[in-house]
Amino acid sequence: MKSIHDIAIIIPAYNPDEKLTTLVNEIISAQFSRVIIVNDGSKKECSRIFKELEGMKECVVLHHSVNQGKGRALKTAFTYFNENYNDSMGLITIDSDGQHTLEDMKKVAAKLMESPTSLVLGSRNFSEENIPFRSRFGNNLTKVVVKFASGIKVSDTQTGLRAIPALFVDDLLEVKGDRYEYEMNMLLECKKKNIKIEEVKIKTIYIEENKSSHFNPIKDSIKIYSVFLKFIASSFASFGIDIVLFMIFSLMLKEVLPDSFIIVSTVLSRVLSSFINFMINRNVVFKSSSSNTMVKYYSLSIVQMGISALGVHYIYSAVSSGEVVIKVIVDSLLFLVSFVIQREWVFKNEVGRRELLNNE
Image (tube, rainbow, N blue to C red; front, side, top):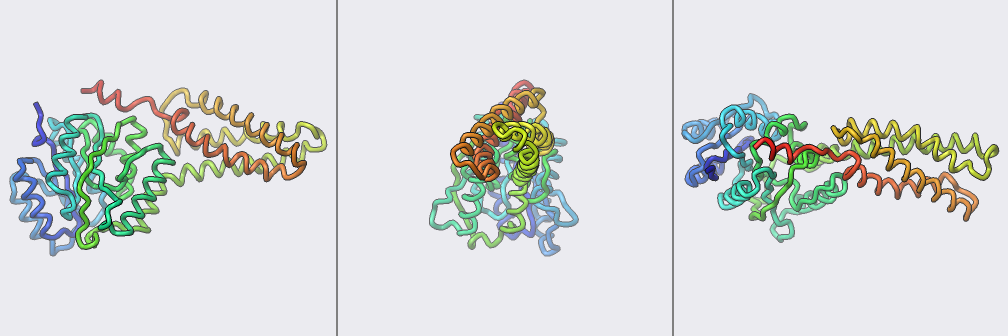
């Protein structure tokens, strides 16, 4: 029977201080025997720390000649894990600055043993008074965006303390992102593969107002949110095409079909714009591998088109002007509903957690 001591500990480190050595000694004292440390292009002054760690038989230190980012460091460690610890049930990623306690590492390890096909997050409490403002604001904003854009509801989207099942590691090696956005993409990969996300509460520790963090709140946040911007870009592109085509068809048909030009124009513009939107959403946004997405998409599109056409028609009949403005308002409301349906039904992958269970 496997125990927590078979779980590997992964620590990406960039310009660490003595806290890293203290942390590793604590980990080894708890009988964790597999510690993978990645020196992500740290300055020469840190060489002494890594040499000391290399002298510990429980540790393996991997080196990047230059800084490549936390995501790339994690992938380097994942590759080593796959090649050397194929008997392990999983791994735990932690930060190198001492903000994760040994007790919390054991908690996420225990949860992984309880749920061996789930990603386990060590989630902090951001309502505590000692939380730096940028951390509280950043996490609260990000979790709202994540919940709306992906349907993933977690309380701590940026935690570095995570327990990852071994059978999920191959998938994570293919996930894009070399820096902090990689951890966000990891959550989205769970959604794509139907991997359940579990959370355990951990202590919220910020040392010296989190000065040791290498997270750039502007640069790295842009990279994190760029994951969602592509959906917005796709939707607005097709929305814009739809509006332009609607205007063109309305001008062409207003005199010819005075009683029905809105409905006809809506149908024609939606047919053309929807195909563009479908291709982008399937291949770029949701990257869906399901075989029946087109049937689902156009079933939704037909219903949405009908609601749009009738809604604009009856509102226009009541006010007798401003058909384009009415169209924009109605379709903006439908956009939000459509997004959720596409995310949860149309492009939802059917593979994932079942595959993990079947491979056990």
